[in-house]
Length: 215
Image (cartoon, rainbow, N blue to C red; front, top):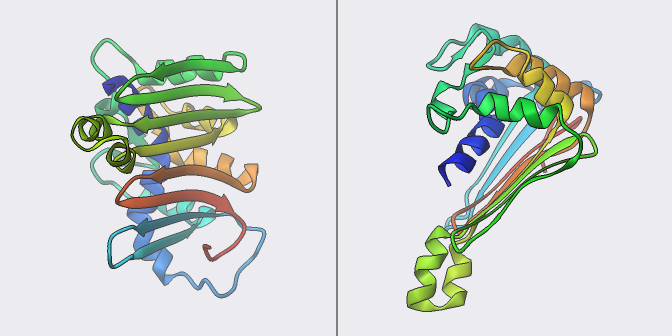
């Protein structure tokens, strides 16, 4: 399943770049007021452990688009992310795969059902959908503790990206994603859910709307 994990890493790239490097500026931002028409990217991480910690990150997309080009850290530079390390192997070009999906008609491109993973990659109504259920740990638990223990170890990831954002990501050079262009396209698109992740440790949600505070 390395190829699908690589594809997921590509889909996460622009969300990672925005939230990782802008957590500090976001905390400094006044979230009690602001122009409601501006779009914000929100990240909410809720721990399922005993302490039940919740982390919220709220970043104005306009601010992110201005700050990111000034950050140079590892694969991030000038508002772009190099994706060399995201390639599945030397024979498979993730960028070429994403470009092929972008230029093709709507349809369900990948469906995998196995004891370890369920994977679905589809394009429909102007969106790219990636849905992955990782049952690897659950399969091991099944042999020892039964189906109930198996279900507790499932990890589910759902990604929904507007195709206009995919177009913007691919506007950079080879082996790069243009994060700033993607953010601008995302802001113009309007409110949308981007990523949800659920496992036995955390629940993660990433979305965009015009509110300057998260749920």
